[in-house]
Amino acid sequence: MVKKKLYGLILDSDGTVMDSKVSQFKWLEYCVTGLYKKPFNYQSCDEKFLKDYNSYYHARGLTGIYELFGIDYDKDRDFLWEHFNTWKVKNPPLIVKGMKEAISEIYERSRPKPGKAKGLRISLNTTNKWPSFEKQFYESGLIKYFDAVLTREDIPEVTDEQGKEKPFLLKPHVYSIEWALDLLGIDPEEALHVGDTLHDIIACRTLRRKDPNLEKEVKVVAVTWGFETKENLASAKPYKIIDDPKQLVKIVEKLGGFD
Image 1: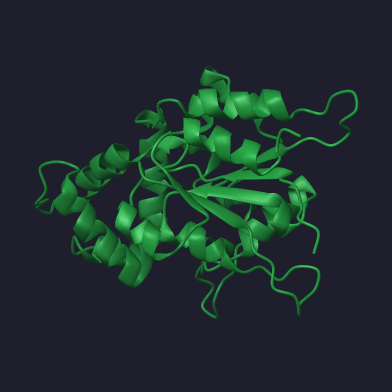
Image 2: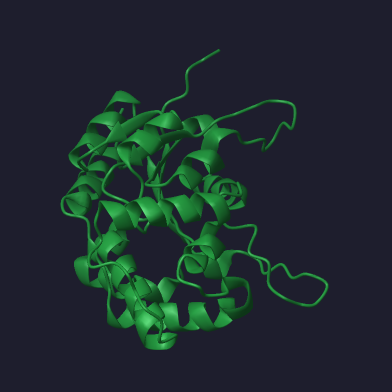
């Protein structure tokens, strides 16, 4: 089998490009105390908070996180998302230190040039809505490095028999990964996905696109500055684990993204 070069980089937003960990902590504190007038038993975004957060998230997804605070996410989902996106516009997280520089270098070194007709293309794949990070991307100039942006608004709304939205096409479903590949015009073996959660790894583990009988995999780079512990990420066996955005440049180079 001919080893394929890297032609696509797919980046998660929260916890990967955006430094969302502290922002998420502050949102939950505001949500619990401000919207629901309930007690919030954490003083900071420390190891205990992250341990509980991930324990409930792994068990029940977003539903589990809100169960941790006695909130019925299934019943109040629309209310929570409405306030969450408004809150994020007013309280935007910062871009991870060194991430813009890493993406910029990858972009500049991988552009098509004389003798190189096809370059590496870059996509954002996030379950957040566009307004929650639009300001940061434009003000920082980060937006110019992305060939495609896939957000929650782009994922089709699927409803149950009662007409209630069921967002099961969001990650860890492979739907958005497959769509990102199509937007970039590449095959799974030509892509590298960068994310901070087990869901990112699960979504990329096996994709069956053009040939249902052939297993194909998108390589995943897991970052340690997001919501998961390094140990949890390692247990899912991603392609690589990195502690600094600069390491991503070296991985892209190793995979032939600059050739």
